Amino acid sequence: MAIAPCQSDPHSVTSGRSVPRSANGGEIPVPSPVHRLQAEIAALGELQDLAREEKFPGWLRMAVPVGASVLLWGGIAWVAGLIA
Image (cartoon, rainbow, N blue to C red; front, side):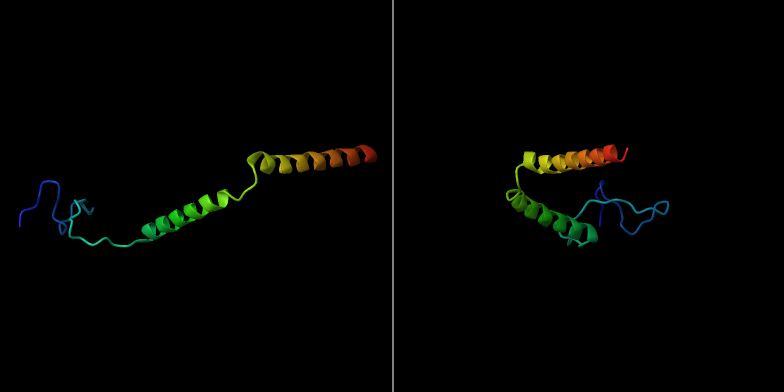
């Protein structure tokens, strides 16, 4: 059995490292944790696309926390002025 120039013998060991080889069309893909994680992330991305349509406008999501922060800091400054 001749080996193509882009492949190497999978049973050989070169300096303690594995040697890369081209995939054969007849080989079965091996599931791995990385593939499972990629599938989970892809599913979350689809859910986020659906959830994005139901959110409030961006200006309102930004204005409410900033406005609340301004009111709270104003209240802190007013109380500090009463104490001093």
